[in-house]
Length: 178
Image (tube, rainbow, N blue to C red; front, side, top):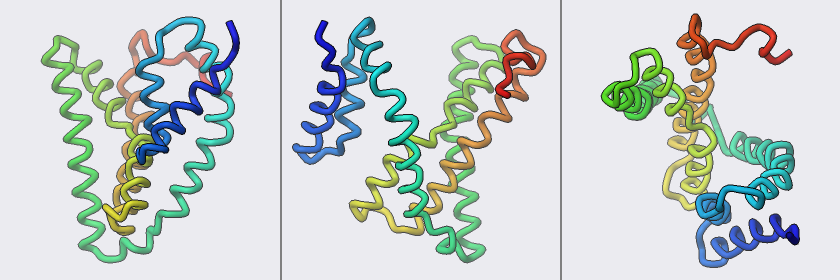
């Protein structure tokens, strides 16, 4: 098989960009349409280091440069930030936890599912950057939403570790990263 995985990915990204949709959506569409198997593994093997080791850090730096925490400068804006954070947790984390519980999953595993579903940092940042660039959201709202995305993402790991203590899923000390 000719190894043209990178070319297919770039073509899909270029096509969505050419029609006025962000290139990231071309990669997303390719990912959803990609049949599982050897070709998908080749794509992953060829681009994983580039995306996680180079492009992802650049994207986070870009997002950080667009974030102006000094814009959230009044008690009302900080209260609004707290409200947005609470709505985000309730709207996604608690909703997913309750959906898992209604599907018959026990409470601990339901809560773990809710916490993991609530960690939305990367996708949230992509959408927020597009909204900011297009003028759909203000720099202040962008900053508030970035704070929410960061906090919901950062809270996931300690909460999952807490929820998994004493279960078969708990990470043993020898599995922990050094």
